[in-house]
Image (cartoon, rainbow, N blue to C red; front, side):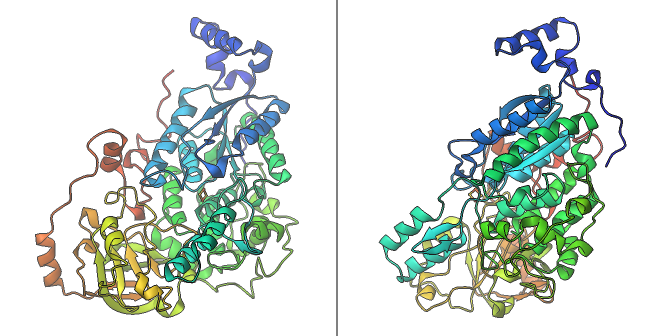
Length: 579
Ligand code: FES
């Protein structure tokens, strides 16, 4: 909570556009009149920018036109003036090479929309994977009052009376199709039934993880992140968020009053207890850095060792987000973690997190496990180090076959994605179930954009032998809906000369998750010889956003933000506004 005095109308940012008596204000008012508004509609009222990531290419946000109207209803009711501002949508399934390449673009767009227009407060509408961190990162840098309206998970998928989970069942049935255990017709039925309503992926993928993290960080109304997108309570939440942001402006409750070290701690703990996506690590580090809060990989690992996984949701568990909501949702889960959370943290409704959890209940102990029956005792995520990943790598142990968590095997190296696609199913590929598949050139610079290529496909001939998991190592990310013994985010990446670039076929690699080790068992003299012979690859871009990205993106362990957007002297917040 803040003890700032209630704002006066003349202190609103928008007053500089509308309230002063000069030629430019005449222009702003006359052009507002052009849109059919009378002065009484907006003068002296908080202007609320609704940053909407709706697009016809984003199936996860297809309800956002209607939700924006519902947000506006709340803004009007509370005495604000809503202005919807579309922003780049980042549609996970469609955007190539990866939405991650554009996360920072949406963050910049969010920040600059809020800076350059007469916004007093912001409603951030996102949900599909990168949209949540991007919107929050941009809003953090601008530091106005802001509330997040999460898209909500879609309904469970349906296939012949069975539930289907986004992503997870795609990978599962794709493997079965390649193994020859289902037909093309079966596969077509999966295609038609797996995504059957608006909303983001309904497994504990990146979208569910990041929307839950935003709620745990205090950025949504209590309970908002778990409501399925088509549920009428989702519409109510949108309207209530619109109402609340107006009061947040009068209270001068800015986003950085909410997102502090306590909020980041709560978000990390929540992600771990959810068995959340490994992608959250990259995004939370980037968000924390925008907020000026220290967060690094060792902190994740330390919290993972003491945080149980309580959400029995795919891909680590059995159920889907719709079940999670009916079981009590995120408030129910957080009510079982109170000793691990900082309950004094502020949230957007001006209550503490602790106050917002009062009365929260769990209605199904199999979906949201009690503390004495966790899905996994600890280690929802694990951070690895070693000569193959001097700056760290991550794995999600709960999503891997347990016997692979301590494994040594010979490397089968693919120099990039195309090489992998061309050779992985070749019957002549020298690979066994004990091999370690290695993918190079899949990191922030190498791919480029740190795509979700980290769940390398199991070679077809091994699938046909019944193999369903192997140790796989890359500098890529993995979809939060994926599973397997996949070591991800190896840093530094191979493209910039990280040791992953030096691995050759047949080298022994040791993965030891309990000891948090990732070791390339090649002696230092040989590695030095290989390093001397290594030549940096050509950059992927020579112009446009691509070259800006390549020049400024940081490594996975640093959050992959642009170096000039992170918090620090002369950066981000604190820039003088030019009016
Ligand atoms: Fe949008 Fe998964 S495709 S959240």
